[in-house]
Each structure stands twice: as structure tokens, then as C-alpha cells.
Image (cartoon, rainbow, N blue to C red; front, side, top):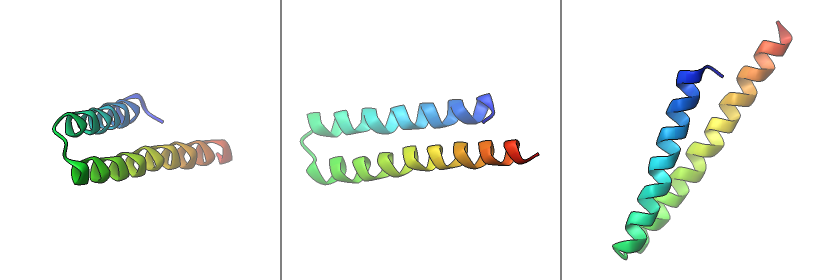
Length: 60
């Protein structure tokens, strides 16, 4: 995975996790749930992209 792409996934993932803590402080249960699901999906997507790129690079 290229460094800019990895940085993008790291920054966005961190912001999503920070938003969960913000919504916990604001006592917004629906937003906590929404951000939790989005962050899990985004982090999982990042792992899938990394595995796909790694698999592509080992074939060549």
C-alpha cells in the first residue's frame, strides 16, 4: 500500500473513532451506533484494500 493511501486510511479511521468519543460525550446513542458501524466498515475496507494490493504485488 502506498504511503499516501495508508495515511488517508489512518487519518480517516482516527477521525471516525474520535467522533465516537465525541458522541459519547454528547450522549447521542444513534450517532454512536452509526459512527461505530461506519468506522468498523471503513477499517475493514482498509484491510481488504491492503490485502488486495499485497496479493496483486506478489503475483507480478
